Amino acid sequence: MAVTAVVGLQWGDEAKGKIVDLLTDRHDVVVRYLGGNNAGHTVVIRGEKYKLSLLPAGVLRPEVTSVIAAGVVLNPGALLGEMDAITKRGIPISQNLLLSDRAHVIFPWHRAEEAMLEKKRGDDAIGTTMRGIGPCYRDKAGRTHAIRVGDLVRPDVFRKRVHEVAEHKNAKQSALDPGSTLTDPEAVLAEYGRYAERLKPHVVDTTAWLHKALRDKRNILFEGAQGSLLDVDHGTFPYVTSSNSSGCGIHAGSGVPERAIEKMIGVVKAYTTRVGGGPCPTELHDAIGQHIRDEGHEYGTVTGRPRRCGWFDAVAASYGARISGIDCLAVMLLDVLSKLDTLQICEAYEIDGERTKEFPSHITDLAKAQPVYRTLPGWKTDISGLKKIADFPKQARAYLDTISELLEHRVEIVSIGPDREQTVFVK
Ligand code: IMP
Image 1 (cartoon, protein in one colour):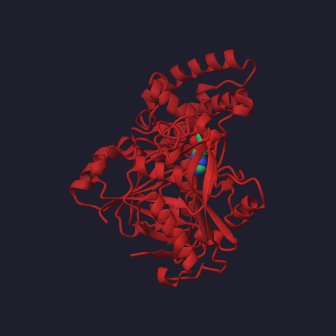
Image 2 (image 1 turned 30 degrees about the horizontal axis):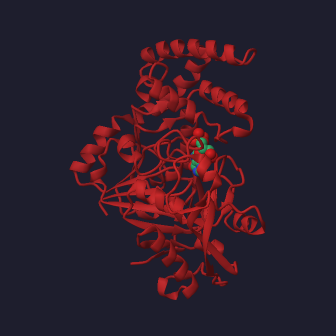
Image 3 (image 1 turned 180 degrees about the vertical axis):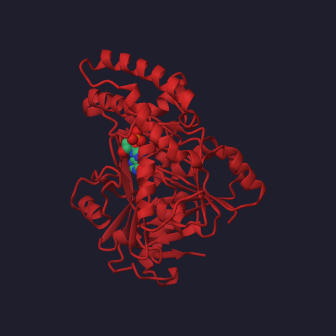
């Protein structure tokens, strides 16, 4: 395991954090390369629950270097809040956390802009996490009103940039939302100045640092956030996040070429969940959907929103697997399905009477997709304490084999509970 990546193949929340945490002790470096504090993952170690959002799961092990790379959009107050919470629980954070000077900074105007735009969309709202992620990425792509971490830690540059950008943002906000509270640039400078002081010791050129780590043959783990179907270019646009959250984003977000990755692990839940708006063909609006939500504790880590739940969608997940270029699969939360009599896996869609296994590129077609299901028997027994795949009930193995067949990759890891110990390596 020299250079490994862990990416979600669905709409996020695939429990990637657990896999990352498990693999962390075989790696020297863990890299977060996209998204911001919209992501959330829970890691359970010896019964202790840690909720992380911006911090890579590697921070729970002080011997590992955690890198927040160039493609991340950073809310510095949120990052410091997480760092303080972890430190309070006895896990020190020092030079083992590196922060890219190329990462972009989220400001109060980004959150104000997002609240205004989402409200204006009414029923068509994307259902974002309201963390200012999209507007910050928009400014990055637009360039003229973006501020990076490298600017934040240079007081003179930062002062000039905040005044320029705040003037523009205030003019725009007054026009679009008359009477709303405008940004006081001096207040931003005071608040962010304090953040900069504390973060400065962690700020480096992470791209150059990672290239040296590659030359030194250090073991590097890339930790994906969100999932492949939320990818801004290849996902269910516009109901996506604003970055390349499939495997496509690793190269862009970290500066490490794709070909350096030796193993790409695609993570799926044993069923489907989605938060926010946008079509989800296998969503269940019935008692089974609620049962999955309850058994899987399917409520957002960041926003607390109930997640939409449904059967495993192999059309969607195999598309995620193809665009991410995976080598093998990790199937998570299999234990959640243990009480159900029969299970369904969507193996094709019917769109306007035509059967297809291709994932539609336009959401109007996805919204029309009727799932074609393969029915499988449930195993109706508690599997959460099993240690070997050979001990799994034959129905559970058949379920995993079906996912493997439809996604055309081996299942190498199966998770049957939140704890590290509740993981079965198939090899
Ligand atoms: P944003 O990333 O806050 O702009 O939200 C855009 C869409 O991505 C919304 O549907 C969110 O619910 C979804 N989203 C963002 N981050 C996550 C995540 O970590 N898990 C699941 N969905 C997410």
